[in-house]
Picture (cartoon, rainbow, N blue to C red):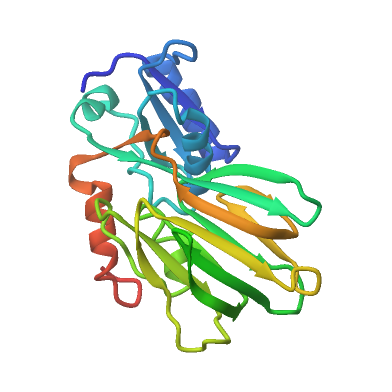
Length: 258
């Protein structure tokens, strides 16, 4: 791919703002007719940019100017256009969440990392989980549960002791958060094209919120999640640090050392 019109966008972090100013001065800043978006910040800002540019068919290249940069490339202001021309492209599809609340309201949202269900009070959540219309777990007592994409499997999913998924694996990770009953259930690997329905049992006594990346819906009674095959975004990575390589390398990290 050849790029000539970068759009630089930055988080509010001072180092990100300074980088945007420097890069725009050197390469221009094409805000209306860009052919590539350069995101400056951390992983949280990258998720914001992915949501903003989904469906716009403009690839996104991130450079780390934040605290966590798993989805970002190393920052350098030198030879940026030449660097962009040799990047490795990775297409991502988000999850689509449809959450119904106790009041009957239905809210839709997308998640490139995961959809998570979380208890709202001291009471543990009670969930029923169905896959493609069949109940697979009649009752899960837990702090919550999450459904993760491969791209998001090294984020919250990994912290909840879920499996790391290769980026091209046609799978989603279903992971419990502090499961109490059944205590030994560790989750499941699901086909990427399946539909998962979470029903909240005793929702009035045990309220649960649903979160799709940055969008939170409180007091849900049911949450339906599936892959949104009609939406995609292309991320760009340096050849020696592709997302595929990063996810693979993450599985060999011991005590913070890879």
